[in-house]
Image (cartoon, rainbow, N blue to C red; front, side, top):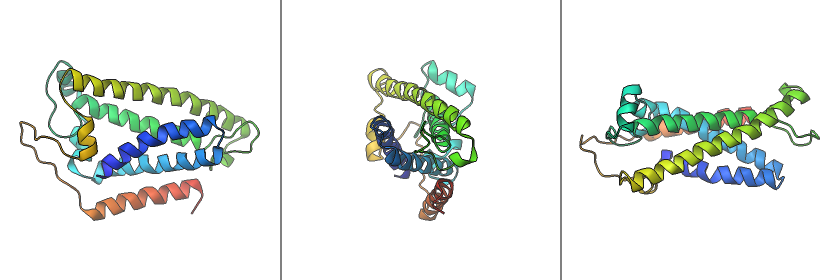
Length: 205
């Protein structure tokens, strides 16, 4: 459930962040960006201590496994396939960089600034603002690849990836692998750490 909630929250936040930027609702844009940062931090922590299919160690595979999958081989079981695992990590890293850049940017008038913009000069903040906007197009590219992969799996491999991300259920693989959940205290720990770090970075604590 935590992984699926983060996934759909991120999917909703990306267009919301674009819209608030275009409409120049910068206070809301900054708040949503800080929320995005918190979600990404949570997912990174959850990737270390979360449920079996959420852990990076369960789905990050070496080049041979990725190549075998690209050539038509089956995935390893529940969770991300060998290629999708690296795609998920790439998405998280781009989101982290994008949110991180946003912490330091300022607009041309210096009226709307990220919570850490006072640590850099105005000129540096404007350069980072340009990088922040450019990184958005990298993110759009990854999203396009993500959607393309979903369509490919559905139409070619006859593998529905969307329904399990809504229901949390998926037919057992041939290996009869079982999904192992994580205790609630780990979720509370991950959520607390992510929220605390975000509040400190955003200047609320």
